[in-house]
Image (cartoon, rainbow, N blue to C red):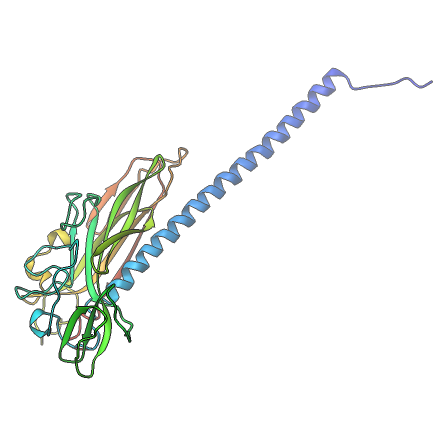
Length: 318
């Protein structure tokens, strides 16, 4: 009969040690792949949110001050009729910075401000201090066949226009119908479970001003306004001479007066991850135009920027 042989205790310990070493290596690779996957997913989310915010703001700015077929500057004197103020109206700075033109001062179709208090414009009470707010007024650039009681509209031809609400369209010869819109963008902090998430908000005009969150993870927005200071006939007329932040703009520059025209807007969007990563510390500085912002926390961020030409401000007629 053959003698039965087995493993010695030393051989078993050696096998266990080799097995543990292999397991530790595999576990290390797994943890590394999981961490990389999480980082990639986070940066993918930042890219998506930041680019979407930049796209929304850019598209609105490109069409700012568009009034259908009307070829001039929108003001109270050229309108056949102007409705009363909508509910929850938002008022920016200046004599004529409500939803519709009034008879005093230049009607501001673009205006912005750095937020220094969460309550702003008489219609917002949760704005994020340190970020910017911007308002834009224009016609939505798709002509309509019918109007309703749910929105404001502008009916216009080359020389005149009327703003109204309701199903009855005012008679303006050789005209088309467009939706009248007043948009406001700002950032607020929003509680989502146990986490505080910055959110890009949009104010939209229906029969009153309503606000909705549109993009999560947008921590700050900032705008620099491109000003042309040359008079008509000069070689530099129609070209941006300088970019100025909202808090440094003058009344004349907002009103496009005294050879100051806003021809472009530079947008800065700072996107932040929704959740913190305790394995990551962010001490980076992000330059939002003329303002550097430094952090010391566990959130990942990406900064996006773009410069938009205001085509409707750079021409005297369409």
